[in-house]
Image 1 (cartoon, rainbow, N blue to C red):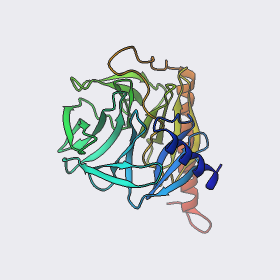
Image 2 (image 1 turned 30 degrees about the vertical axis):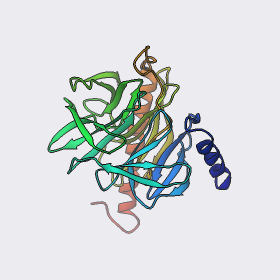
Image 3 (image 1 turned 60 degrees about the vertical axis):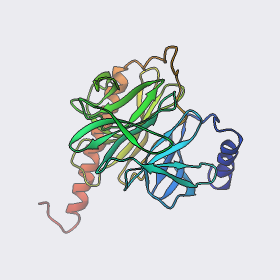
Image 4 (image 1 turned 135 degrees about the vertical axis):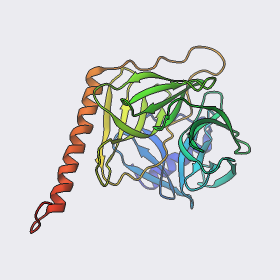
Length: 294
């Protein structure tokens, strides 16, 4: 569904209740200076509101408020999904800064990872002022996105193999929770559905120009798949699927999906094959009729 019909549904959800249930296959994303709903199964997005500003990382808190980190400046923004209005909450207070991951946990706390002054750090962001407070320097660069499971923080790393990792805010320790055996690929966005599936944006770790991108999913049963085929013009930046699920202060969060070796190997194989195919296509287009290979 596109156009006025989809916008009407979004408006109805946004205006009726801030804790509206979000469909698992839909996510908020940004395309240039627009806020859009992304169909994770097809990779197609419907622009909902022009924002007039370039936003990068996105996060939904438990009440349904959508926060963002501005792409070109280290500032916290709040986006009204019912109107498209963007409010500057405040400066993060860290510059220069390169954000990597941004999320809200089940207690409503905003967490941010990124590089500042040569170190890769975890910050907690005040949703009322935008001020980012250094929590701890991480012992590994979790550069592939950030999401929450209850009060736990999960991220992704691409070396030595692509893995889902758990971040300990108390110590800065980064421990592997789910290694994706069979190959490596890079990721630049990550979020988790209330049902427990992990979704993200990925790219192959091969020297291809332009670099193709994908949407991937790690299901609760451990199956891993690419839902969106590679494209050389992947336009999306932030990813926010729904308010964080899990528990705040009590209870046990759902278990992380168990690894499915066949699914993980298949994902790595598809990424590798797609990368090789794109490289050959690029080489062929460069040589072209009437041109000799270099």
